[in-house]
Amino acid sequence: MVCTRCGSETPNDSKYCSICGIAVPPLPPPVPEPTVLQNTSVIQSMRGRMRPIRTSEALLVEFAAWLPLLNVALLLMWSTAKNENLNRARLARAKLLSIFIIMSAAAATLGVLALLVHTGYLEGSPFPVLLWP
Image (cartoon, rainbow, N blue to C red):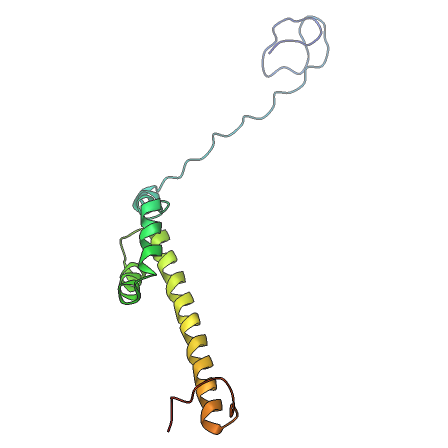
């Protein structure tokens, strides 16, 4: 250790400089080495599954939305795949959920409209009565 007043070399365990007698500040405690994650097998196994979706994969999911039967089949396949990309599986699950919500809302709307037509609440409306004689 070097004395801050006279610049002489002093032993690391001394409290005072051996030349000028000034108090020497103690050494700072050693900084511990940063710990490294020891079990990297989990990270290595997830590496391929957590990669970002490529543009071509995202476009394929979007394109499949325009073909209803293919859409549902591919989304079901992608959402249940175990060893595939997790991001694509999550996107497929979100698409399936949105399809379910939209189809449920459409079915409820058509059901209410059919009920209104059948009960006569829409007499004289511009909707043609094609559902019941």
